[in-house]
Image (cartoon, rainbow, N blue to C red; front, side):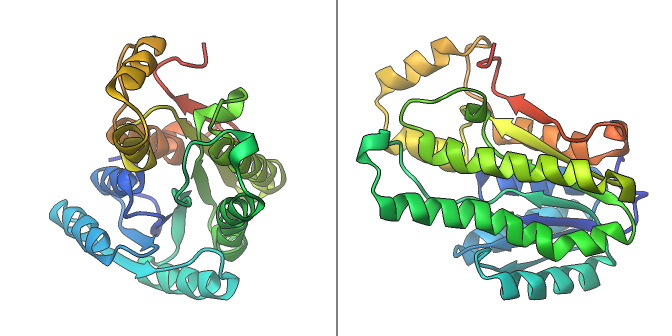
Length: 254
């Protein structure tokens, strides 16, 4: 198992969502104990924890609003105590949003999404960076493949995630000397979490079929496929990879 011999465990922000939950399970399968956070759905968090435990790994979780910097510091300390330090920190969180044209987005919604995503990720990095410096380790932020091109009706997702990507690249640039790697994974259309909600609530079957046909692999992705990319980048197999973004989108960037 790729992570079994690393000191400490993995801290996952947003570990109860569709992709975050898959990341927690993939980490457990790779041999890592897990501490994850959730925003409001404790039932989802409890279910995710049971699945991790079934894989034979230790797990704990806590409710957390990533916009509350003091709370992030407190939970990061609890996670470090539980895990015996971090070898990995994953940002897999993000606010609820809808596909909208830029002209239809209100200033209040823009501020809400930007504050939750960009400030939330910064608070996570701020709270965990000193602990990663102590032993070396890796960050992975789950962003979106839409950061590579201007998307129609998806700027509320793409613009904040582009800022998150730059933050993570900055960590890679500045902290490599301390043995820290930092990368991003950019999902495309994934049948989990926000992607599933958009497809089931905001798109027609004909629109989904158009999307599917636009993907070179001609299918919608699965959360486990994103999670495997995350674990690869956290693992020793990616020991000389830092400052990169890996799109998991079936080839849509081609």
